[in-house]
Amino acid sequence: MPRALFEKLGTARFLSHLDLMRLFQRSFKRAGLPLTHTQGFNPRPSVSIALPLSLGAESRCELLDFDLERPVPLSDIRDRLNAALVDGIRVQEVYDGGAKIKNLALLQSRLILEYDRGVPERGEGAIRDLFTREELILEKKNRNGVTQQNIIPMIRQLEISRISEGELALDLLHCCQNPSLNPMQLGAAIEKYLPELAPDYIRVCRKEIYTEEKTVFR
Image (cartoon, helix red, strand yellow):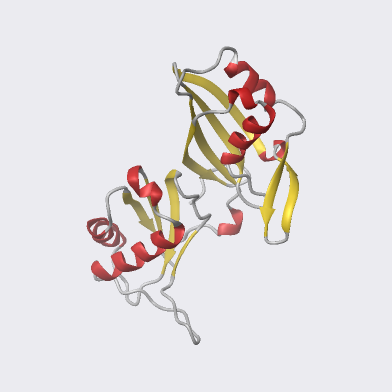
């Protein structure tokens, strides 16, 4: 089954996961690339996206698996899809032989913390100290209700830097499957444990995806 590596940037970040799936289904049709369909009483187009992205987040490393009714050169698929997609969604590469999604383990993400009145004094150091603790407990909602979760074991690497008078960047390598850490939980941790340093706005972008061995996942 072919796989597409694509990015979701700019205003496209406000497309929900379901809207993105519908967009790709329509784009395949407009591009003259007929998808196969699943079997059963409710056939669906054979497309799936690994690790659905949170609404409002950007990404440079999204993966789309799909299946076509007939073979088409991979470079043609990329070019025809890009001509049919909207601004902010761009297919970077289409290839065969993608790795099994179950082996996708780590994400490199960047969070930008925005402070309208400037980064508070000693804010950078206090946030760095917060994430060196052995335990940071947050509530996590799931289908079984609300559970308590320590997010520290899911943070593999974290670098904090000031990129402007009003912005801090958190470059984060973290678990994304079994268990999974949503980068926005770092913002929730700051709000809970350092409320005086809670940012006015947070931007998130996925940068790269890796196996457990930290090799690039494709």
